[in-house]
Length: 377
Image (cartoon, rainbow, N blue to C red; front, side, top):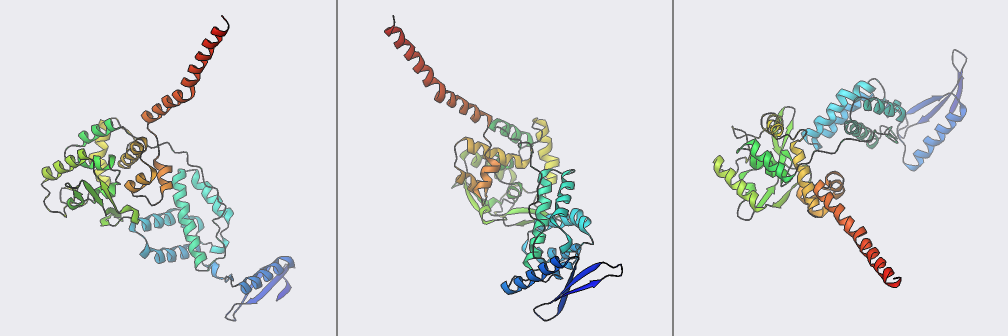
């Protein structure tokens, strides 16, 4: 039912009164009769199709739903995932939308927020924060608090970040020497086998098969809220068995013997007390000083992983094999992130191109010229 009325100031308003499936009444007010009729028709059509969403459900405030959403999702997330989403909401999205109801937040408001963030944060960081907001509104849709998400047709800043630092094998050997005997094998595990820092830090003696020359990756070190623990990889692709090259088998054997690691469950690269090493401590005390001494400014431990993948691609390993060795679930991510061809391979490609496109042409031109001279002495 649509009722026409006048406000105290004399303005005309149209009240649409409808009933929920449970019989309770709800209403919406519009400035024009056309808007009121359109709303009424849409509500009735959605009810008939089974797509009806209670228009009052979206009146919950953003910050209230954010807390509820986090509590709903926490059991299914890894600690670091929870920390990432929680931080994005606490630092950026709650202050931005505090006091607003979910159905008040429009694509225009979201776009304005993204544009503001892009002025002070990198494109990658803005993308990370946006994914939190998008997931939050998707959760609100799933629980029928809102009918549409405001995170639609949002323009994110383009990522023009510089290519990650990649090192050559000779530089990897130099870095391994620089970190000292206690950590050189870990450098090779990252730079030759392509393991993530957490995967390398979680390796146990029993994960290295010195007879069959195999490495078993089944765990990763997780740091969250100041606590450190060992957990399973994020995806099943992270569980993998990798063939070890002979020189690295020798490195690992020397490391185990030199460190006196007899317990199969002992960490291969643990701290002095036998617990997992923290990423920040390793970077500050071991990796950073070695990188500086070798003149490899900008290199991170994850950069070793990129370097390993680059060498594999340059050597001709197919995408599926690279995907397996890196422990990625999606081969497209492998191609997008890691298929950087080294300068040496690129130079070889240029030489091959020259031979393909010019050498035969030059030879043919010379032959044609000789034949022309013979025909026209």
